[in-house]
Image (cartoon, rainbow, N blue to C red; front, side):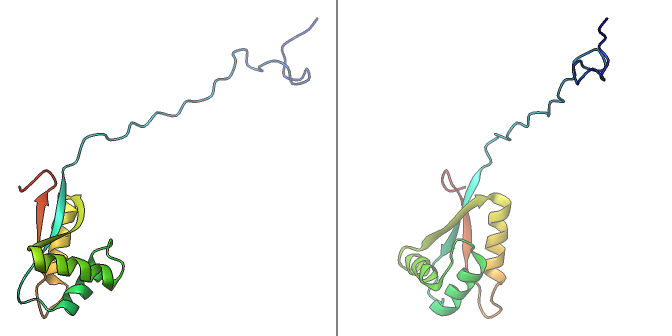
Length: 119
């Protein structure tokens, strides 16, 4: 007579019911659209190129060298503004504040603009 005890060569479930794997919950990605804002460097006649470029290089992570900073500086001086990066509103406000405070000798002027147009 055969039994379903676990000692019969590894056959049988041991507890009667088959064991089921525990399913992990499926995480849903947060799909709500977060409004994005452009951080813009504003041109100013009183700027000195080298200090402004140093500040841009220090504060803005997308600017990795002085050449990139000079390109943004030149664009802002010629057209009145230059796009630095696009982020959520809170982070954009922090970048604007950091740019203004980075150098105690001057203020680097920046502004936020909704990605969908002026706020």
